[in-house]
Amino acid sequence: MSERIGTVQLIQKMNRVLVLDRLRAGGEMSRAELSAETGMSLASITNIVKYLAECGYVREVGTVATSKAGRRTELLAFNQTAGELAVVHVEANEVYFARCDLLGSILEQGCMPTLVAQSGAVMETVRQVLSKIVNERTLGVGVAISGHVDNRGAVSSVQLNWDGYPVREKLLAEGFPNVFVVNNSRSKAMGLSEPIVDGVFLDLSDGLGLVRFLGGRVDEGVSGELGHTTVMKDGPLCACGNYGCLEKVVSPGYLQKQFGGNLERMLEAYENGERVPALVEAAEYLGIGLANVISLFEPPCIVINPNCMTKKDRFYHSVLEYAQRRLGRLSLRRVMYLRSEVTHEAALAGLARHVADGIFGVDGNVV
Ligand SMILES: [Zn+2]
Image 1 (cartoon, protein in one colour):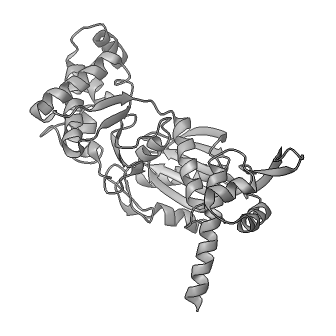
Image 2 (cartoon, helix red, strand yellow; image 1 turned 135 degrees about the vertical axis):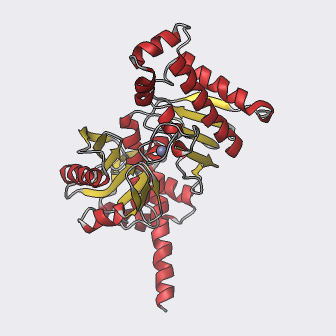
């Protein structure tokens, strides 16, 4: 019996989610249009809209004429101001944060340096930032952080020395509502202006992250740490405790230390056609990383979120050339490369939309 009731409630919820999805996708719609698009009866739509309007998530935004006789029908829209979302993006040295409306538009944003680059301090910084931006109107919280995030929101990160650290659980225990934790390259991928359908998003902006998309969705099975694969036996010590990680040997900090000189000037010289050993080597290693990604996934396209080096045209094209050279006969299939810079703002907005999808989804607890 209780199972039956549960099923009915679930169907009702799914119907509410369906209506809300249409309205959240944008635009103003009448009840008749919602009925036509969802396949639900006008009576059901009327009930659902009444419920959602009482919750505050749907509002009437005007009327439109439906016949020559002058009959008018009400237009409905999603009320993006019915609550707020709080999102934080944890980078190596700072935490970016924003308060957003329910469609992910940023209301307020800022940045705070991470207290110290160690695991406890990172969590403390997140806590402090959230305490500032979460208020009684906040419906959901998003945290993007480097490392592998499991489906319970626990983070494993070689860099932070976390092995299944329960970020989500800890934040929920402190009273923050509806906490979603994602990998920070993934949240940048969600901030892309053109979403990837099939391909790989390579995030070079802070370390080296990889997100694979299949059929317009993130491939959850691929979530390793490409940046911490060894490419140089007995190479330099990486923050993860290993030696010769790809991320380390192509990092601006290492290159400056190893080869001396100012990276900005080195890049300028390279762009002017000079042979700069540090950058030749970095391009070669990045090319190796790229070739490995192509060998593993054979993606039709690779979208690269560049760092200060790959933003420069000559260096970027050198990386692609080295990758193609490494692939040799394997590169029978042409890969389409695209550079697309994801700003912190775009990443925060992408994360907010992810949180909104979660709280307004079937598994959410908002409607
Ligand atoms: Zn490493």
